[in-house]
Amino acid sequence: MIRSIYTKNILNYFFVIIVSLILSFVITFFLFQNQVTQNREAEVIEQGKAIIHLYQRLDKSGFNEYLNSLSSLPYDVYIYNQNGLASKSPQAAKKRELNRKNIDYVLDGGVYRNISGRHHMSVGLPFDIKNEPYALFITPSLKEQFSQIRSIILTALFLVLLLGISLILVTTKFLVRPLAHITNATRQLARGNFQVRLHVKSKDEIGQLAKSFNFMVEELEKTEQMRKDFVANVSHELQSPLTAIKGMVIALKDGVVDHSEQKRYFGLMEQESDRLSSLTKQLLNLSILEAGKSPFHPKRFRLDRQMRNQLVALQPLWAEKQLDVDFDLPNIEIFADEGLLNQVWTNLYVNAIKYNWQNGKITVQGYDFEDEIEVVISNTGQGIPIEDLPYIFERFYRVEKAHTRAAESYGLGLAVAKRIIELHNGEISVTSTEGQETTFKIRIAQNSKRRVHDEKR
Image (cartoon, rainbow, N blue to C red; front, side, top):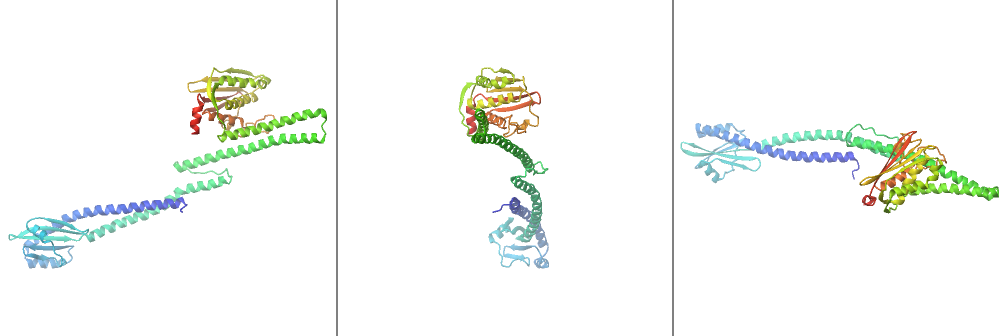
């Protein structure tokens, strides 16, 4: 099996060129053959008229002497009268006999034309000598002329083939070279080298492929870095509560904790266990959503009522920061999965509270359009740096890079929210002014059931 694309291209080009040359030769040869035959016929007729004129002026013996002196004539000459063959050229075939019917046809004044085989022609012309009818038959051989034409065409086609093969070998090498670079770069990428880049200046499909490859490598490098950050963050988050729980268990087991302190230790162990449970639940939830296996149970419900209830449930958090909440949603009904959307509003509300200023403000607005609804959640606060905005919805991404337990953020909440909105055939976007405000805008189709089912098909 041929594996090299260079070899495949060479063989394909060779096949195309050889087939094209063969067809060109056949077509050209037959076109030339017909043209040569027509031209030759006209020449033979003119030569026949000249021979007739000479025969009429000379007697038979003088004409025969003339023919004998021209032993290299490129044609055979036969002259017939009523009695049969009157004269012929020296090189004319002795045993060749013309059809008597054709001879009589010319003797009666007709002009005879015939091409016998591929390389022979016969022309018969009538003339009179002293009122006696004669017939001149001249049969030139076209074989030598056609052989010359064939040799010229074959030589030209051979030169074209030789030149074409040389150019194909060179141009195909230049064509395949970028693909070889892409293959080598792909192997390096598979080994984990995210620094590899392709430098292809062409604007064609290969150039676009190289550009797409470079973009893919950059995205993979960012994803890999986020994965490493996530592993470091999660490892720290897992290790911290586990270490704390283990230390407290050992202290309780060894009896070094006073009876009055045991209740507080159990409370701390419960708190650390809740942190572990929260992290594992978020990871499991995201993996289910990413795999497309999350159950989807749409129903019609009041979206404004759902969002208001979620905000009320989080009142202790925003009341602690003394936040001003402006809730302005009209009565909006939507056909969607209520449980999944609960996760979206919870994540966005918690972020709006967590990253807000003390005595800041949260604004929730909603708009009911004909085919979709739009929800806008804004909060004052520290905002999101502009360099972090393109990646804010990517899983494992955290704006604050430090491993702080107080933040209780694993970089999964917005990734979960984005995936849930996409399951409802919607869009979520974010704008932020650092140090001032952050705004999330969500657009969801009014009837999500039909569109999600279409997506699954």
